[in-house]
Amino acid sequence: MLKQFVHIVLIATLLFLSGSSVSRAQVYAGEDVTISGGIPVVLEATYTGYTGIPVTAQDDYFVGPFPIGFEFEFFGNTYTNFAIGPNGLLSFNLPDILDVVHWTNVTIPTSIFESTILGPYQDLFQRPGAPHNQFIYYQTVGLEPERKLIVGWCEAPMFSCESSYVTAQIVLNESDYSIENHLINKPACEANLGNRATMGLNRDDVLGVTVPGRNNTSWTAVNETWRYEPDGPDNYTVENADFMPEVIVPPGHISYRWYKDQYPGGEEVSTAQRFIVSPLETTTYYCEITLCGGLKYVDEVSIQVIPIPNAFNPDSPVDENRTFRVFANPPDHIINYKLIIFDRWGQKVFESNDIADGWDGQQNGNDCNSGVYVWVVYYDAGEGKVTNKGTVTLVR
Image 1 (cartoon, rainbow, N blue to C red):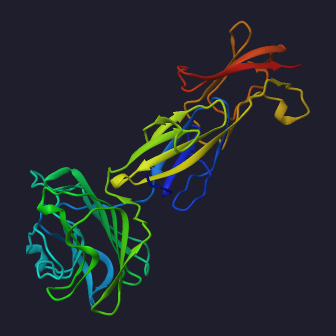
Image 2: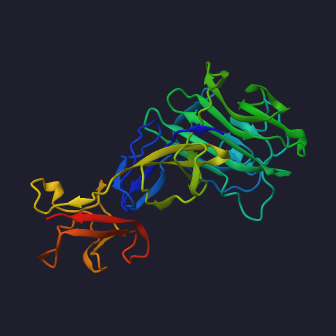
């Protein structure tokens, strides 16, 4: 299992927007929350990586043109648009490539896919009743002169092996015209043409560059990155690089899973993007998100719990001791919270939906007697769920 850190915002709130404070690369978790025990806290994970633009394509048919978003040089020629072939192809050969429909094996160099990146090329998808519009995507990200075009295949089913999925990315870098090819998963499919696949760059039927051992051969790959760097107008160097795929998904391809106390191995507490906790002791929660091909990323948020006062004196010389209150920091935008205080006979003497309000020891403007009172914290204004309760002594 790959554990990395990604753009996730874990918004920890007291039924409001707030958060944890673990500052790491590719993640913003906000600030930790401090509460009195039992105050409801909303944990909300927000994915802030890139979301791709879905591509609608029929089986084997190239589609486009799409804008690169910058000028890109490929084998000495400059391009501003590209086309996508559903079978793992990015081509600059516009408009001619739009007439090409191909699914059988090819060996680089080839005249079939001129000015094309094969990343990797292998027959994908059955012929559908509807277009493939949930597996392929692209997006141009970043700022000039460091922009990059990301084209991805998210769990694309292989032809004749529909339970096996290819997840891969082709990335064009504006800064140096290099190309990165991330293979999250390229399984075997012996049922279709002996699993032969091709991975490389093709200029025409004379010139091309391939990854060693992957030119119309049978192979598999998991969590690999290959980088192509221009070496003059007619050549590229090819090398294996650290596996660093782009954090990007097509719409809807993300799942959430929350764990308590530790990660991995902690207690799973939710699979929702947003859920409510009301811890009675300091607790750390971990949110794991899963993207295409099983890529997993995690961030954490800590809920610091402090004791609730057990006594107060409205005549105390210390301001903090003059009222009874529960605590939340930060306290903004709290909703669905209620505090009620009862005397020993069960009569309500104080009620508030605002956590900033404390009890000053009075009822209807009159001083209450010294003694022990019961307080109850509810999650919802209808008093339907008690999240904590206890007693406090009013001292006169």
